[in-house]
Image (cartoon, rainbow, N blue to C red; front, side, top):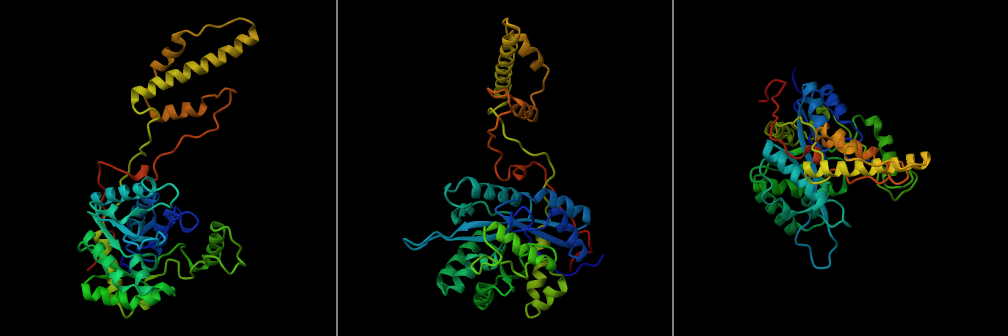
Length: 384
């Protein structure tokens, strides 16, 4: 099947809560309908959709591009200046890049001050950029924001740092969606890209599949921000934030055909899909022996509590013997999932399931590390 000649690289799935409104499977289906040879998902600070998205794309004959929109703290701010959080769009080229994505997303959630939103300092990217392609993230990136504010020197100093982190893997992102920041910055972005011989790439960050969903998406943003639709001072959904077909994107970038062509180049450089495997679940006690000991202790406590209640009813004590606990447990495999199920059923002092929940896995524990690799070959004819 002939492809459309354009690849959407900036799609938010429904895993970008209260912003993205497309299920991972629906992204693959819509990409197939529009003739895209590939499609990229870049959820904010997360790889939650990576596995279902990759699986759905492969079944649909569309190449998945696994990425994230990573929050990055702007470096070298003036003393007393407020903290500035910008974004970079990062994409995995291979297993090394995918593991680096996992590490960066985990660091964004786990290594920041608890009172601040998830992010990483720019220095955290040092040594973690191999196998990653970087886009400057349009109006959400520091480069466009600094240019739009007239801070040209700061913008170029920032760009040089990003270039050093991503040698031959940095793309200057151009977005045309009637955004004030992008409009003011575009001419300077183009000049800088041509002066530094950096490739341009056209994107249209999208949160919903079809333009008819715009009104519903606008209402969803009101829910996200606890505001009313009638309010003037509230975030609003962009009418351009849908998966535009290739002909519309080519028309929009008729003066920059290389920016459209480079979407295909990025796709070819990122032929890697998230690996398929079972989730990595956290240990309840640190190791397998500790889990078995904890299970025995909790079983004994539960048995004593039940026998005590029976003794109160029958009027005579019932002794707890070791075999009551040890014999049944000796036949159980050391399976963390079974132990977790037991923990949910374990009664508290009232004989009811406990109400407190344990802390769950890290934000990307289901997409962290794997010994297997997963690459994708183009289902459509090779791109020339």
